[in-house]
Image (tube, rainbow, N blue to C red; front, side):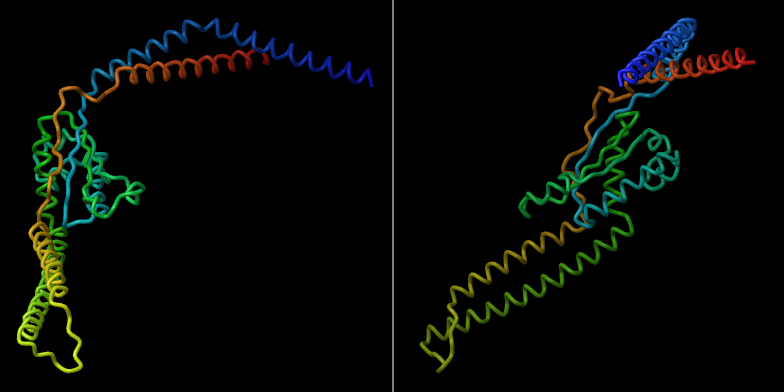
Length: 289
């Protein structure tokens, strides 16, 4: 038993010695190429700085929009689809869609639309607090195009054929609902006058149950308020409301001065390690042969 323990201890010590010896050899080998590692890292950093100087500045801005013609998911999907043209460098298509000049469209670098209030937070809000607005975030290389971009987005949401059809359907449904409510108001108003005549003349039909005119009047007021709200909604169906416009900032949001050299240096160091590893393998092959 003691002999086995001694053998195990000796084996563990041998493994430790082998590992230390391997690490020592690796460090000594890398020391031979420390200059190569430093040179490639510096070259990578310099290339990163060069790319930084060649990359145009971009500015982020956002606008908040409320469209009664479209639901938020529909509007968000339409706007986010524009990013595909930017990713593919199809600025001519983007320019045609938004009725912008190619030069203006080319300065748009990113599009993103989101719910103003995240969906997971909406369940905590009362229905009257949901305003149906959504946020459009844009990155541009020139802040002067933001005014043109804002108008282009508004015009697109107002003049798009699909949106116009949706607006017409929504307006027609609201008008039908308003007519129905107005007819109900007229019926209740007629009932109120009849009740007043009966009460004023003290003519009570035998066995009839009479409604209190005050209750009828309250119902008429409720329906009238609803009718006014629907009338307002009809007027706003075609309207795109800008809750918050794009703002112009003189401070660029990118590119990141630290990020470019850091990534360049990391890539340079990685390439240097690859070269050193290839040299190590070549030396091993020569030694074996």
